[in-house]
Image (cartoon, rainbow, N blue to C red):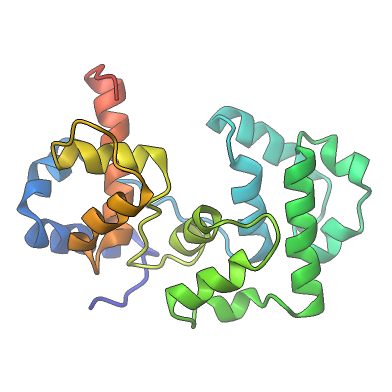
Length: 215
């Protein structure tokens, strides 16, 4: 199994090659997608905060909210976050639920219940379990953190609707598969599921934007 983390375009390209060798159906998909974005982001509290802020809003809205949120602090970290009043943080555009989630994450880090620097050393199942013990952090959020903040090479967030649609499309299914079926169908792409998830998101954008296909 390739254990190189997806922290560079070169590593991603190598994993896409491995993915195509493992599942030849993906060779034309990779060719059609051209460049697949790495989408690497910061780890630690800042990375988790960026994921939470961006949930269930458009890319443009997430960017605007994040800009206001980050400007409140000299350094986006748990200590500085906890030093701010709720009305100031929510004034940046965060919902009450997102504010409570980040409070729980910050408190867990402050008390030592969550040690971000240790997550990369854990098996993914344990890392996900550690994160989902925090109120407000579900499996999708935990998997997205491992995927983009830690560059884990074999994570596939099967609860993501775009990924479900693409897995159904690749497999010729009439109905969009649910999370459990999506996860099972994506098993064939292990140990390159991190690259597969990036490819499927890119493929979704290509079909939607370039070809006008309704998904």
